[in-house]
Image (cartoon, rainbow, N blue to C red; front, top):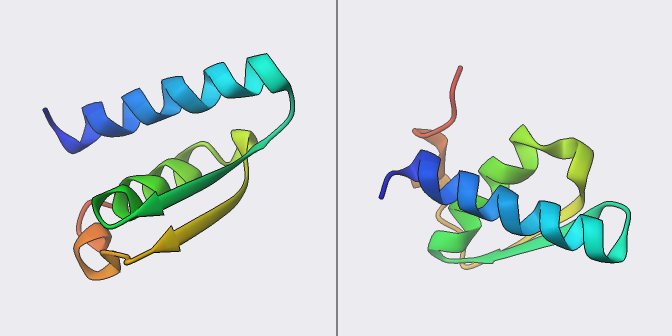
Amino acid sequence: MTVEQFIADLDELVQAVCERVGGKQVVFGHSWGSALGVLDAARFAEKVSAYVGSGQLAKSAARWVST
């Protein structure tokens, strides 16, 4: 799996929750999930009202951000 596939899978999950309960959602990520969560929230801000990270991999995540 690639980082892009992980983010696509997370976005599918967020979209499903948006459709089920309505509105924007809060994304929480821990450790590796914190890297995916912040990237997902940045790319799909229209679906995410807030991002919460714990045990973040911020330094590692920065290299995956497309410029």
